[in-house]
Amino acid sequence: MKTKYTVVIVAIALGLAATLYAAEQQVANAAHKVITLKSHGVAVAELRLLTRDSLQVNGMKENLDAMTGILTAKGGVTIQLGSTGDSPITIKADEVVVSPVAK
Image (cartoon, rainbow, N blue to C red):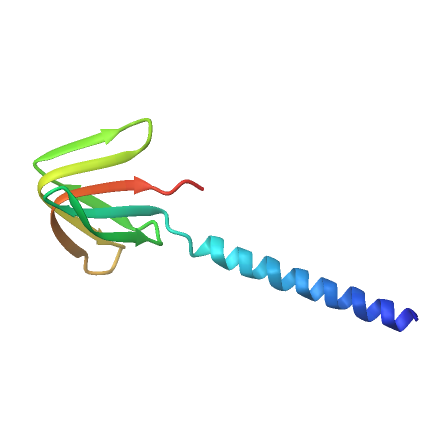
């Protein structure tokens, strides 16, 4: 009987450990920012940034909402993504909305 309880407790502990590991991996892979690319006011693509690499947005008209942290840029927008040591990725669009992901 003691062996049976020991096996059940070990099985529960292993299941809990596997669940916590999976949850930790999911949080580690969560997006930090979402970039929505728009053309003529219609969303055509959405990028989810998984790392906190450098993000530079340049456009003719930029608006940053300090309360929500949402950046909106219009008119020939250029986005540069990259980390130190890598060549940057450049994206061009008519309109871009960069919003932080709530945790």
